[in-house]
Image 1: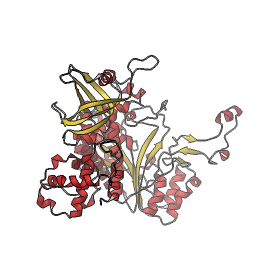
Image 2 (image 1 turned 180 degrees about the vertical axis):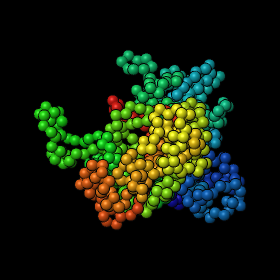
Image 3 (image 1 turned 90 degrees about the vertical axis):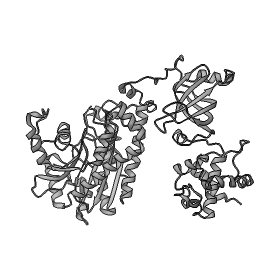
Image 4 (image 1 turned 30 degrees about the vertical axis):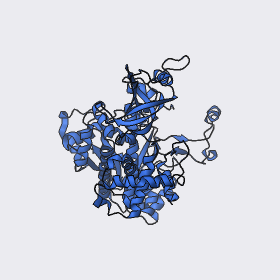
Length: 578
């Protein structure tokens, strides 16, 4: 008796619909005899090492390597290798192979279908039409579902009769760029260059149309031509269907996952910090206020707002950082990180600034500045390697069409050992460059390094990534640990070629008296930060952390020139559509 539990496990893990030849839902008990009859055939193929004739095997191990732990590393190239595994392991593998080999493959992404060796197996494609070419006896249609950069070519062959039938011909005449469709056919080798497989299509179902000329409906705006990035920002709800923004979205997705992988592999706990706060983590005051008070009525009355009657009973804001809250958990769980949206009401309308963006902020107890620097370097290299490994097609597109040499830049950062330089030494180097550098902003000790200064340090002086440390206290936040000179703090900025600052962090002040003094110097209300000061009152410990804007990371990896093009729906001055 075939174990129903195993079938159920396979069914739920694959999330695939299984039907028998009559279109009825798959019933393991009813098909037991058929399965047992076919298993010897599959057994023979496996023993012979003839895996190419079982394309589902490739799909199985690629998509669900942990599905069958007993044979997770199994690659049957010879009967001797195969014989090492128990009868139960072989039976489980056979059952798994047969389950996906016997029934049509549906609900597979184009990315997965492109990885399957073409054996004229039935496939179903769902996606959006990118292009269509109608020749005398052939119709070529490229369909893309966004799962990978490349779409798949579906070929409709009219054959000697010169027709595919009235219904199919009508559908092919109607369909155009932007239509959502379902195509059924067989996966076959492709004779065309640049692609290994295609679909010999036999059925086409139009799911949704995208009219180019229809009274009362605006024509579908994305046609087969190059659109400007400015135009695509106006239709941000559709721009993910383009090559550029589809690639950006996939890179963003992969690196978002890699962020969690990196920290989870190193013992960091993921925490969720509040979006609404009464604290200003940066002490800069550029925050969006949150209130339920009737500001219009207050304006007419001329009275000052009574925030005691507000929803939270005090002035409240959208957070600029989750760092302070992360510190509270770092002093309990040792290593934590937060990854979420943050907001800054800076009056800046540049290609480098957003009002809403995502921040990655790790925090580690018993860690000093040197530990923080090492973590930041490892973090960047891990992320860049993930992009190069898993987003190769997308990065090749960015290299060809957005930023030449972007792949080489990422590789060079991975292969580099990050240089270390104090702020004082950096200023000395910049001042020495003098007129030869032609800086717009003259560097001097005490100034905040500008982007041009950061790029000069990485591209001309160090010729690679550099971590600048020990900045003047006046240009850094209140929570940074004071150095013994009482003039500088244990801050760090990670600078990379072509961008400048990509990470900022510090060792945090862990001494209560020093932190209270610093808050007073900056005219900040100690009562607002009493909970933060408690971390120094009770079991204080050295701790460090850093922050990295996720959009700045994506901008660096993709080469996109405007930060508004690496987030799905940018929020900036005068921009809150969608």
